[in-house]
Length: 289
Image (cartoon, one colour):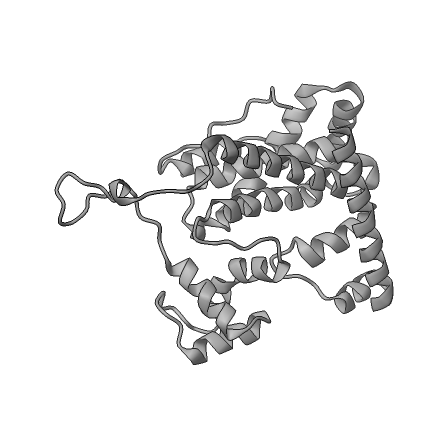
């Protein structure tokens, strides 16, 4: 899969040129997609994998463009999304009866959102689903409430946002401050000290570069283990985990029960079973790593 060559993602404002490139790749019919997936998985046919990947690059661009408001280069968002797409092609099982685009969108969104969360230096969110939802839904909620000022939220506005997103007013206020903030370059000259930059005034007790690299490698390993575990779940259990914890707008047990035609308690049981399988898979991967 690493041998697949994709169109270069521009680092400047030439993103429209990249879109013109990816739109040249043909869409695949159901039969074409099925046969290519079989060829790739049964014969390790890299040409088949290349066609599967390139035919879905426009999907990556569309998803990545939806996250353009977080201050990160589109080139980076698309590159991360392409990585998610390639992992999806590796895991895709054409025998399950659904299209690659349906399966791949979850991997693409997961790759892009994880990159955003890890890249925002002012946001320390952990892995709580509610905090991730708040991070990615605050702007939309403000727009729905006709709040267009990027400054401080009033108490009334914070409470209105909080009620819509199911968080506290304090959490909405703090997240709005984080999103309204902007990192500035440490190489910016200081206003009163000619020749000095802000970087010159900082001291750091941060971990060494070696520790940071080790932590990053460990994080990537853990993410890969989780993705592998998700790929092993049956369709319904995977969809429940994705809808409950990997979606920008998590779905309630009741709504999932209506979707699958089962009770709320049955959905809860499936969710618990899926978590147990994920835990066992991750532990097994740790043991063999």
